[in-house]
Length: 218
Image (cartoon, rainbow, N blue to C red; front, side):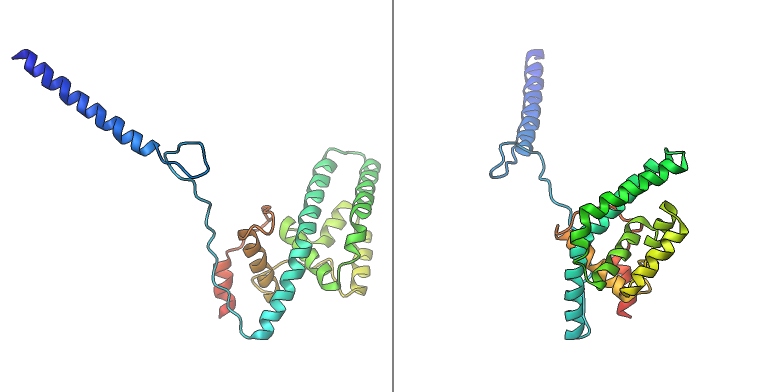
């Protein structure tokens, strides 16, 4: 009798184990075509949901497309500029002597001018102003204040006066909550990032496009 009980116990245990193994094998043998690795799950790309963009008329569509072309053109320069400024400010903290700080900022300025001058001078007035706004979007500080902090107030004053000749202002800030053009720019950037047309870099302030869309639709 004891042998029968032991046999039944052994048999039931074997069946239970075999069921677990069979279940595990079914889970583990998920194979994606073209992939040599057997997986227990399938990795999916993150889906970014954005509100549907509506337009009032054909003229607004035309202006949006023009703004889109200009924004995508200058975005990478704004990212590059903000990166340069971040590195500059980090290094300036460790430079104590005023003369050394001045020399270092001049070297950086010269480097940027030599590296980007041929490209930047091709920008239109509108593109230049968008670039100024995007620098503020990335850094949280206007181009005017950045120049003032790195150089001095006098330099910032003259740089801004020079910009005014070309109908631009270094004091312009990015504010999609109160400026409709800035809302369109933010919409363009977020959709381009979703479609992987631009490389993402964390801005100083993140904006909820659903919230912005709701505000401007009103």
